[in-house]
Every structure is written in C-alpha cells, then in structure tokens.
Image (cartoon, rainbow, N blue to C red; front, side, top):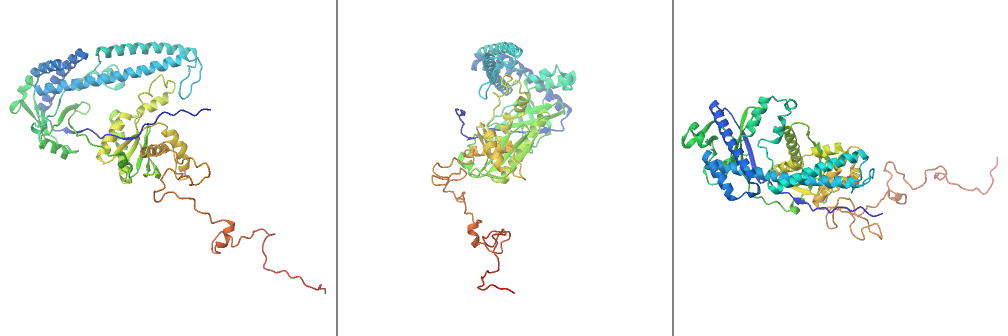
Length: 546
C-alpha cells in the first residue's frame, strides 16, 4: 500500500503592514442651508461621475491617455479641474476593480465546468476518494448536471467574450441595492425609502489630497481648528458664502482617533483625501479623512520568532488561540475568542473587530512579538459543483470572513506593535488533532480540535514540525544518535534531559527512611508465611516431660 502523496507546504512569511489610514467624524449642527448645499453638490457631481463611467466603459480596451484627457477636459467645464481629476480617478479605480472581479468570475466558472465534466465522465454510483470525486448517485442527478454544465459553459463563453472586448458590467450605487428594489417587502423598505437610499449612494463628494497645497487638499479643506470648507463646482458657485467660490460649513470636526497624526499631516501640508457621505437611515452626515503611509519594512522572521508565538485557528464562530514558546512548546491553557456573524454587515464587522482586539490584548500580555494565522483563501472551495450536497459545509466556509479578517488583523496588530506571520493551512487541523489534542487533554483542561490546530499553526510559524517527537534511533532508544525531541536542541539550556533514575524500587529499599509514610521499612514480604518473627528458635538437647 503506497503512502498518501502530500502537497508541498509553502514557507511562512511575515505579512506586510497597512499602507493607508482612514478616520471618520460626524458633521454635527449643520444648518438647513448646509444640508441643501451638500445635497446639490453631491447630486451634481454624481451625475458627472455617471457620465464619466459610461464613457470609460464605452472605451473598453481602447482607453489611452488621450481619451482620459478628453474626458477630464469635458468634466472641468462643468465642475473644476480638481473635481474632474477626482472623478476620473474614481472611475478608473472602479473599472479596474470590475475587471478583477470579472477575472475571478471566469476562474470560478472554469473550476465548475472542470468538476462537472469530471464527475459526468465517471459511471453512475462510482465512489470517489479524497483526491478525486466520483460519479453522481443516480441517472436523474446525472441528467440535471448535464443541463447545469451547458448553462455554465454558456456563461463562461459570454464572460470570456466580454473580457476580450473590454466590456464590464458596473452598477453605480451597488448591484445589491439595485436588486433590493425587487424585494422591498423582505428588506422592510418602502419605495420612497429605497429611492432616497439609491440616490444618495450615487452621489459623489470625494476629493483627492495634494501634497504642498494648503492643508493638503484644495477642494475639501479642513483647518487645524476643524473648519470644513468646500470648493463649489462652477454651476453652483452662487451658493458660496465666502471668497473664491467656497462654502464653509457651520459644523466643526475633531477627530478623536488619530487626531494628532492627522493634525501633523495638514500642518505640514501633506496630502489628505476627504469624503463626505450621508447615512440615510440615521439622517447624519459624516466626513472621512484618509491618507497613505510609506511602505513599512516588516521585521525579519527570526525576530518575530524570538519571543514565541500565538497560534490562531480561524473558525466560523470563534478564534482558537494557543501560546507557544520559541521552542514550540505549548504554554498555559487554550483561549477562545467568540464572535457572531449572523447579523447585518455593520454588526458582523463590529464582532470581528471586538474579537481581534481581545486577541491582540492577550498577545501583549503574553509578551510575544507576532501572531501566527493561516493564509486562508476559500475562493476555490465554495463552488457548488464541488460541495453540492454538503450544504452545511459550504455555509460554514462561506461564513468565515477571510479577506476582511486578514485586513483587519494586520492593520490593528500594527498599531499594537505586533507582526502577523501567515502560514500554509495544509493539514493543520488534521495533524494538530493527531499529535496534540489527546496529550494535552486533562480533567481541568478540555482540548478541542481547533485548539490543537492553533498549536500546529504556531509550530509551523516557528519553523518546527507539527509532530511532537521524531522517530527514535534504530540501534537503541536513547540519545546515542542525537537528541530525539524537536522542542529544543542539544545546546539549549534547560532542554529535556535524559530520564531520571527511578529510586522507588525494591532493591533500593535500604536507602529509604522509616519516617516515609506509605512505604515498607524493609524489603521483606508482607505475607504471613514470609513474615519475620521476633522469637528465636533453639533446639533443646533433652526432651522435657512433666
């Protein structure tokens, strides 16, 4: 019987730190005129953004610097050169994002077609293996899958043709919100409420920063005192309440989070981008400031391993974390940090941030320099064709927010001075449960499969194999051919030494003291036949009679 062929395992690496910062504050105490001007500017620039996106999609692959300059020139007449630059840049970013999503959709369709073709080529009822799927269970299911194959092939051909022709399908305002129009009852919205939300999402009130300009932005300017002013587009310049066609809002902002860092940037006239948006449900206006950070050099992997590691296993409802020292030995008890991903998007995001905060605070208390996490990507594992009958499993892996979790964890860990080490997720749960779940289980410590996986992740990040011991030498089971443990090397002080001699044996009974409770004073047997007597036997020479 041949051994199972394992796939290659990628080496761990230190994840790059965040490249940007975004902070937000509410625009309070706005007057009626302020609200009116913001709505007019957002609606006017939103219409220009719609026209620019339409023109960019029409250009397709024929886009060039000349076509971009022509679009920007046309927008400048209806707004300003800076507003036109922000609109065209947002259009290019949205078109590029649509192209990336289009490629991911094509790859997903190709994976589904390959799976269907393979399973349809197998006999009906053929059992599959872990490495290859078998046939379908019945002729009826086989027939339905043939129809499914034709549907996917048609979608794939259409998607490939769109990509070759440079055609993308973009909905400004969001396709999800657009589809909500057909399910207002389920979304608990009226047509008027949906219309207000739809129009608001299609507004445009964002300005890119400019280094060297006053306070880092000429279009939306925020002074160190918190005064917010907007450069009005040319058709709306008559609404200005100050010089040079600017409108100053009555509200003043004060960023509570990273306020000092923001103030340092605008004082030095460094670029800061701003975005103003309206929350329709709450009826509140918000201002978001963002800027880029210089590329931060990550610490070497050996430095991250110097103080040990926290291994974190990501699950659908909790983080399973375990602390390991630099030799790969588990320290203390497992820790679990729970979260709930069943609510709205804002609620789920808050749950993830709260759980990550707990993990980071515990890591700081442990004194480690890095956290190990699996480099998860379930894009190839969510296909309906691969796990069609395993609906609960597909729902399980769909609930794990891999992309958002990694982004949140890296950015929040950087603020705490911690690094993130990403490891290959291959076999961590399987080998962790095999080598660590049972040995670490105790009456007062319950070990789950996820806790053991956290140990496996941490050991892989530290450069140690997941299994606890290597195979003993062939000639004898001692350290004659080298140290047998993988927790520490021979030159490490305090390593696991040889087995201490056992003194509690019968042939060492002379060395025991009589004060020891529960042990015999001598090595004599406790049976009646072998018990020693205090009497001495003496044979008399004459027979005594009387």
